[in-house]
Length: 252
Image (cartoon, rainbow, N blue to C red; front, side):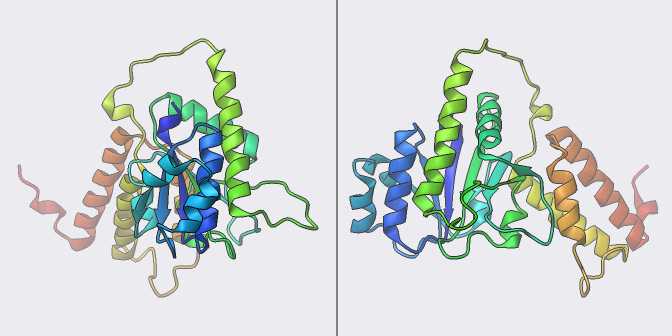
């Protein structure tokens, strides 16, 4: 179950924080670490701070983009310490742990996403997550060290996992078409959707406002499965044909 949960660190500037995060993960039974463009890795400081969690560091995957880090995931939860102009579905740390474990137990791939030490995640990066999680720290001294933030959410995941061990197993056979669309599949859908909206002049690319962000929020909380995704993509394709004026060209 826990092997389905990955921790994603975006653009980490201090290698010691990567090592501290790896230690926090191993303390709580998590092992999958993905690094998006770390400024300095591998590094001796990372190994020193890991304090025995070298296996987590050795197994870390380094990628160039958040999209690559989230490939295959059907649930991404991004950490956010700031109010955003676009409201987004929020979880507290306890809810984050429960949701992560429940969906990992169903065979889904889960990502817990942490941002830069100095600025966190950008709005664009947060909009690629289904939920935001806020750790309710002291408002007079709210900034958490990156490794400390990883420790808090990893602890909540472990607490939820331990609770689930005593619960009766619920095993259901799920048809492949009922599996949730992964984040990379959703990104292809959003690209297709944006292109279609431009084609029918519903979206002005020069003045997009928050349209795509709002649509991301809508579909992100809808838990779209692969069968439904196929329907949505088909509707977009046919809409584009009508917009081009070649809908009549279908074969009999």
